[in-house]
Image (cartoon, rainbow, N blue to C red; front, side, top):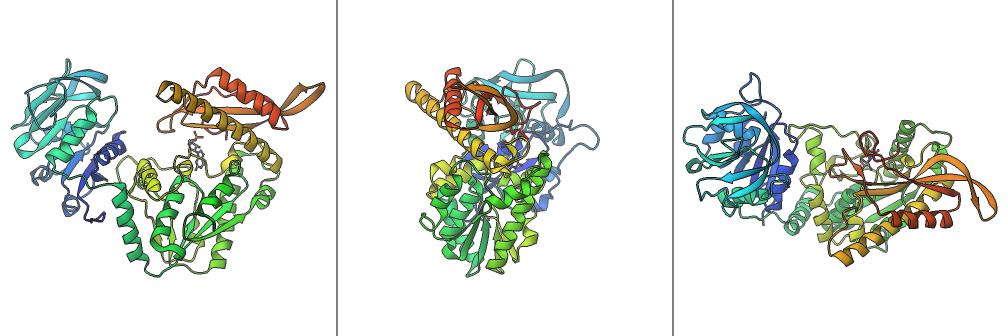
Length: 529
Ligand code: XMP
């Protein structure tokens, strides 16, 4: 059994394009492990990793311009198969003596592409006419010597070319994007066919190998983990528990800003009556948080208080436990890449849940068992470990929790209102989605990627029975999004919204109006604050 270091791997060299993490994910879907490195990474370092194949990504530059990202020519002389995508395709042809120029017309969007030249290993099994996703200004006007054109479009004479003998392939379009109908097949052909990877990257072996690695690393040491109940920290807890049992202590801080019953659910899974062997400490810090938040209505001030209070509570618990050998964190691969350590496209994350924790705990080393995994892989590992589906497929939930779904001042009373309204909303949406699926055999098109109720700070007059009311308005939010950077309001059927509205008004005291938030992001954000 291989571990990650000896695992056969493909290296993705990042030239700053927007789909680069997607390239890596698609490769992993072929059961081939891959890692992303910046184009600034030294060739010797790449060689030392002994890759089975190399993929050059897209990027925003023109490769013929002075100072544009480039790479040493020797990369193409290592005898390792190389696949260039978009900018990577142009760069490969440019470096090897072909010609890249500004195209007479920009090609953008779904484009019909013709596979030329009959059989070649990159397009094996791909239809002669296929739809691909194009996005480029420059084009390859003359293939590099020794290269043969493999595909063209109406506007692009070289949609793909290759030097098959040297196993060098260039694709002008983006096979990693789902709009490229047979893109997965092309990437599969490259990594499994041309590179000859055997496809050993599977989550069951990941779990097994990582458990072994953790045991070796930790020995009889003690490990401390801040467990939030989110997917990443839960899966980290499951893995560590399987590896080292009671040497692991998980501290779960219930800040009173969780969704309804969530604290008990986390305790049910990881607590003493749960299925995992570990020390579980639940800190019920609700009142403490409400005390600190009293009178505070400015969103950033609330975020700051919630974050700082978490550190204080955790620090106190850590002091009780005493020195530990390792502090475990649920860092995952996108966190690594986005913090600029992995690839080139450094989008620094602004949402940090556990800011500054390491400074407050007496430990020797950090352990991050999920740092090589994408989110969908973390979920698969979670299922392997027997973590309940409800937890594994949880929708994203912000670190400051309901604190940023209550506009204005947070109080215990408001938390209770928003918890109850949110519970009803999720229950009805889930029920309607399940019914749709049962009737139609497919998921409803409106099923949101994130949905929750929030409490507006607005009170208004209403009438209930014969009485005048002066109560709060609840806002329902539901968005369709892929990356959570942009989003659209989901088209939840009106009948479902009506049911939710009447249940909330009838069942949740203190609410007399329900709004549906139609705002997309931008200009709105997904959360309310
Ligand atoms: P926004 O509101 O910025 O949210 O459109 C985008 C995604 O990030 C989540 N989010 C947070 N997550 N701490 C987090 O861990 C935060 O402070 C935070 N604020 C927003 C939000 O739920 C959505 O998925």
